[in-house]
Structures are given as C-alpha cells and as structure tokens.
Image 1 (cartoon, rainbow, N blue to C red):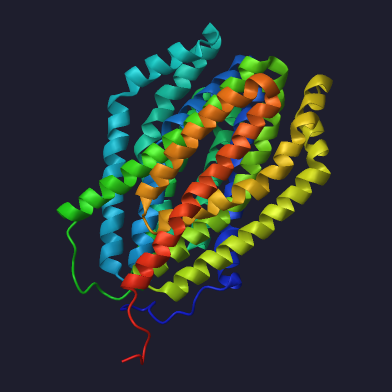
Image 2: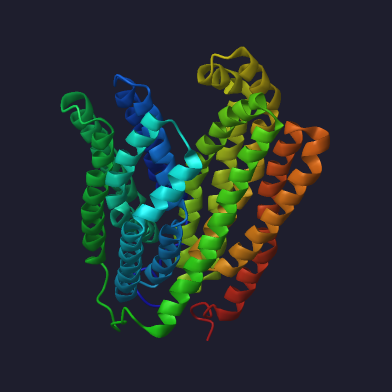
Length: 452
C-alpha cells in the first residue's frame, strides 16, 4: 500500500456518523426548493402557474434521474484512488466524468425540441398549463450541462470522504435557488421564467463552488508518481462499462416505481391517492438512509482501492449497523406519527382512511429497505456494477411478476406486498454476491506488516 492513507485505522462508528450526517442534512434541503417553487407560484393570479412548474420540475427529475450514474460511478473510481492517496488518478477520474457530463449535457441541448415535443404530448395538460410549462422547459433545459457536472462533482466529494463539502455544495445550490426564486418572482414578477432561471443560475454557481472545493482538497494530496492520461483506452472502457451498468440499474428502479404508481391508478383513484401520500414516507426514509449508503460508498471504495480486508469489513459493518439503527428509528416514528403525517398531507377523509389502512406497509418498509440501500453503497464504492445490474434485473422481473400475481386477489395490499418483495429481493440478490467481494480481497490483499 502507498499513499498518505495507507496506515489509517479501520473506520469506526464516529467516522461513519461524521460522514453520514452532512449527507442527511443536505438531502433535507432538497424538498425546500420544491416547496418555495410552489409557494411563489401559489401567489400568482392563475393556478395554472403551480401546475406548470410542477409538471416542468417532474419532467426534469425524470430526465436527469437516468444520468445518476455520473454521481455513483465517479464515487467508485475516486474512492478507490483516494484509498491509496493517488491524487493523479483522482484528477483524471474527475476530468473523465466532467467531459462525459458536458458531452451529455450538450446532447440534451441539441435534443431539446424532440424531448419537449414527446414529453408534452404524453402530459397532455390544459392549454394554459402547457404554455407556462413550455416556457419553464425552454429556460431550464440550459442548465443540463451544469446539472450533470454537479453529479460528477458530488461523486468526487463523496469519494474523497468530504461530506461536509457536500453539505456546503448542496446548501449553496439550493439556497441560491430559493433566494433567486424570491427575487425573480415576487419582486421582479418574472413568473415561471423566473423560477426556471433561478434553477439555471444556481446550478452553474454550484459547479464553480464544487470545483473550488475539490481542487482545494486535491492540493493536500501528494504529487502523482505517474500522470495518467484522460483518454487511456482501458480506463475509458471501464468508465463506460461501470456507467452503463448503473444506468440500466437506475432505469429499472425508475420503471418499477412508475409501474407501482400506474398499477395503483388501475386499482382506483382512492388507492392511487393513498399510495401517493404514503410513498412520501419512503422518500423521507431515503433521505435518512442515503447518508449511510454514501458513507459505505466512500469507505468501502477506499478499502477496496488499498486492498484492505480489515478496512473493508469494518466499513461494511459500521455503516450497516448504523443504518439499521436509523431504520429502526424510522419504523418507530412511522408507527407512532404516521397518522399525524397522513392528516397533515390531506384533508380528504376517504384518502386519510385509505392511507391509514395501508400504513402498516410503510411501517415495515425501513426494516426491509435498509439492506438494499447499504448493499448499493458497497457495490458502488467497489465499482462492481455488473452484480448491481444483474441483481436489479432479477428484482425487476420478480416485481412485475408479483404485481401480476398478487394484485388481482389482494388489490392494493397485493401491490404493496409486491413492492416489499422488490426491496427484499434487491437485498437478497446483492447479498448473494457480497461474499465474492470478500473472496477477491482475500486473494488480492497484501500480507500484514511483519509477516515476512
């Protein structure tokens, strides 16, 4: 082992929580942007403004979600290089990710007309909503390269185990967005165009900040003993393979949640509304567990890079135990306060009653979902994305089969059972591959010091 990090002690619980809490706090800042967007549009003279921004924001969420591999793949490569203190490889991994991000962002610029045409044909809203939403889209699309670059920058910061910088980055990104919302709409009266422009400026501001935060940390690493080339053939092939597998995994995940929503709609409007309320609890759960999954990415990836069985086992153990403790807390909170949340989310008595009927599924969800969250983090950090892809393909197929088989006799309870099975199978399939990582480390780890 080489580099400044070779003799670090295995990660303990203090280290895990130190990495996780900034991610959790930064995640909590995300829904505030949507709340402010809705609030400023809520004071416009036409309710179509609210609907237009909601549609536009949802469209971009779906559009960008498929590019999440830029964040996850970058984390894996950077964390492994960080494990051995290879500043040169970290720089090149970031450069490759940024080049890919800018190229894909430019492609979205070029394809904006067909993307908008297809999207608004599918949405089929009222004329006024579509007019405002098109105005929002035409401005917001120009943030595409910055959004994708920020994915790469966040992946680098997590790989560098600098989650406090992640918190600063996200607070500046979302704080700038909120501040410009309040300036452009209530003060300057720019409507949906102001909301969209606020997002564009905030994203490019965050790119500049992210680059500065990363370069500041890289200066502290020792100089590279070898200067790798950005366009090395093997490295590029590895980048494409890792990102391609993660993209397939992400599209399957998005597709399953879309199918969950669509299946609820086929059951009935009441069930659809109840599911929409309860699924928000699953999103809140992800905000909490993501912190430990990201900690697992950084710590497991670093241990993998230095080929350390001891550090890898400690990273898996401490992040998973910590995440399980938080999952238990979520289950307890949903069991005691779930009814309060449902009441706050809707005034409709029928929806409240239906959501309460299906609440036990969400009470159980944290204890089922935590394992797949953590295993995702471990496999992302080690860039073993073939296993992630295969596990997700199996899980998706079984989920669709479960929906087909369980919904007719059990209705919406069958749909929720299918979702729980999906979460459980994701964990079981990834867990089946986990021993391979330990065997690989056993074969490739250097002998302990003094063993001759």
